[in-house]
Image 1 (spheres, rainbow, N blue to C red):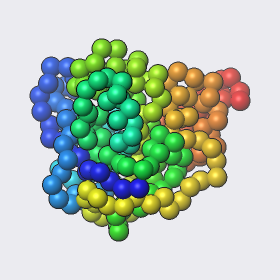
Image 2: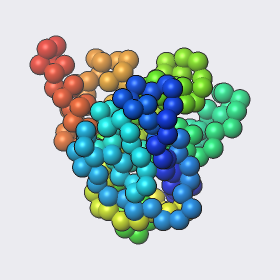
Image 3: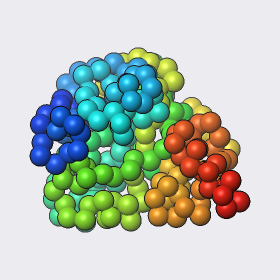
Image 4: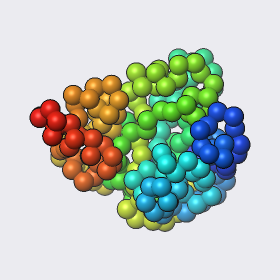
Length: 222
């Protein structure tokens, strides 16, 4: 398991985002050298966990619980076959393009050591939005991405440090529950009856998903 690339994006103006200044950093490209990774601060204030990577719409992106976004190269390859077009590393706006790692099958709270220093913790899947759809230029992309159910994973930074292309990825902690990124994604998008099952992940779960699960149980039981 390793990093094929570490991807960062600079803010640029586009016509398809609802960010107030019309800016997005979704167009991410592989970095040439090492990249510093650290917790960026709370959502709404903090941006990306990667130095030099711009998160422009902090209402919905960035912050400690969405500090780093990882996508498996294997899933990008699957989309390449389906879409009939090349998808270079970073195409989905991911910070980390991995090889040999089941990113969407990772458990919430699972911890990865990346390189010799950095430790990251899985929190939730990526919810597709209009900016993602228009950046990729695929019709009904939000629906198609959601139906596929392989969203990649957001991670929080447990231990900061530097990472770079080629770094090994090691799973150093795997919780004993069965709440995967894919399950969490389905629960918060198309199968809300699954929300009570998310509670098994406890505080490792992204706070917004945890609140949604608790609200569902309070209203419907479970």
